[in-house]
Image (tube, rainbow, N blue to C red; front, side, top):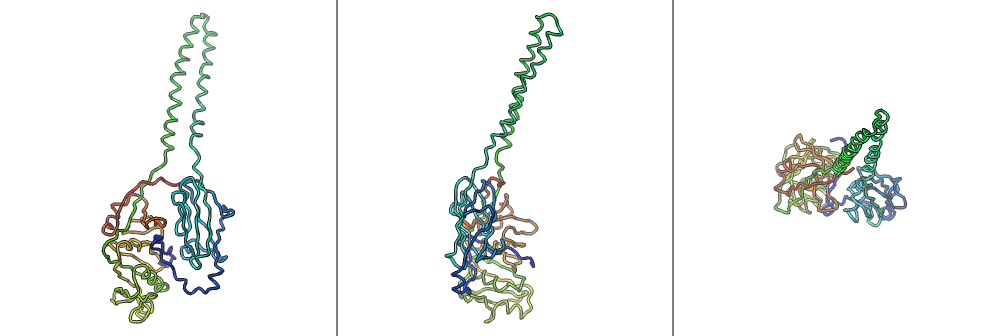
Length: 360
């Protein structure tokens, strides 16, 4: 886990506000947000339906790496049916129309950048059919041999005999040129793929277990976890290399016997720290995108999720690609028909498979 994993991605309604309390008033006042993509001119950009654009963003004049954007700014679309935007700033053009993407600094909510996105419809596919039908004009050229018949046979009465096959050729050849046109129509139909939508239920508490193995960011990451699954005064069962403790969340830090959890782990030279928490089912699904640097695994509903990033995870040896519907109800959208593989989550979530048009 030494490689930097993509950071926390959750639904808008459950988004975690990363700590900016230390920012002074002067820094907040001068906060600014700009977009530097060459395609963007005068805060406007035009995309074709199905295309994507990764936004390049500067905050306070400094370029922010894509994997760190979700820590610095938030993205919101005015019309998700026209264009959507991910927590890391990737725009996906959906259908013809216009939408506004608002980028807001987390350090200063007044620092915003509004980008107007115009989506054009895909070019009509009829031009290909016109091209393939053009060869039908060659049919008359087959009449040429009919002029040779009189020159080889003196009797004029035999000339009509050579013309008859010519008219038959026209009739038989016309359907042959039309057949490929109907096949083209079939091949040009949009490709349909499957997606599995995992929507959290609002039910009783369930136990979630998160294992951390990077001491450098342990305290910050555990505090983030506590901030969206617990309240001030809440307690957690904690294990330091298997040894059990009870930790308390004071509203800012997770503590063990008055010491920060990370300090206790360092004192014990613990290589792994496991935090157990009782969480409402409507929030537990959102633990899946919790993928900061120090997280090794997330376990709930008797299922262990590993190798977690903001775009993929594993259950056992099976790989899954996913995204979080940050503009909707926070559902996790997994690529492909994975209902059977994710059936283990039915106690905390509703599993539905739907069709989605493949994007270019």
